[in-house]
Image (cartoon, rainbow, N blue to C red; front, side):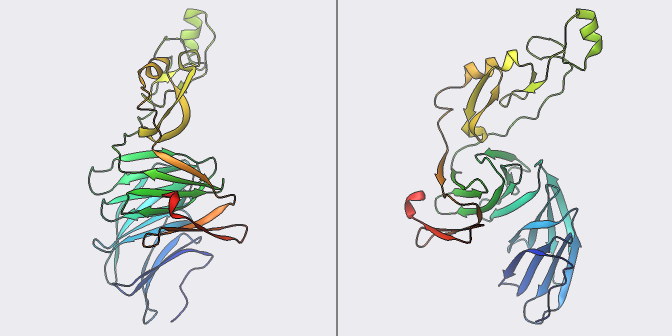
Amino acid sequence: MEELAHQSRVMMILFVLEMEWVLSTGQDKHFTWHCSESGQRLGGYRTSAGACGLQFDVETRHVFVGDHSGQVTILKLEQESCSLVTTFKGHTGGVTALCWDPIQRVLFSGSSDHSIIMWDIGGRKGTAIELQGHNDKVQSLSYAHHTRQLISCGADGGIVVWNMDVERQETPEWLDSDSCQKCDQPFFWNFKQMWDSKKIGLRQHHCRKCGKAVCGKCSSKRSSIPLMGFEFEVRVCDSCHESITDEERAPTATFHDSKHNIVHVHFDATRGWLLTSGTDKVIKVGARSLL
């Protein structure tokens, strides 16, 4: 077999047994695929930045490529052709890991911005659910189909097991405003209102529950909102804080400290084993009790 045609470091590689294909992404901003038997290059696609995340759906022949710009690209592969299906972006940092659930038709993307986004590709036409449970970049994802649990690992050494068998809510878009949408005090760039009211402008914040633009005084409270993916406490406006019940604060994820910087995770459902490898050159085997 001939070498894969990348001009710099290969970041991810997949072997598709059903098609006898080898798929690969690299820092050279290219996705390529080859025939695994002959080594013949079947095609390629140039991404917007160095690509690292890679997943493939056998049924639709869709390949998912995540890159360092935070973009996810979906391509349709034929025997010797490739076509762009769509692109989408929700991360403020680069995509560092992808995980595909072919049953629910959901794609998970992890990022250097510490977040995970669940993209509903097949069912709800682009619904995106954000998950916040790491204090450093997310480096690897795995999915346990039989229990509908997502396993995420990061540079913070944390292993987070997310219950995906709950009805989660999309995070709202942040609204734009020149003044606080609760008390109408001007923000610091609103010179006209500051002059008219003879008041110093305030710093703008956003409530994570309703998305409204608010000042610090009107958003002095914090709360976890697990069904919106916020397992840690985040800023919310005072009225939203009062509306959040204890049931809504109930966690939907469990947290475990692996005590090493994890770069890859694999879950073996038949044995209930969780394998992690880290930058410390150590491979660890986790017990069934994690799930």
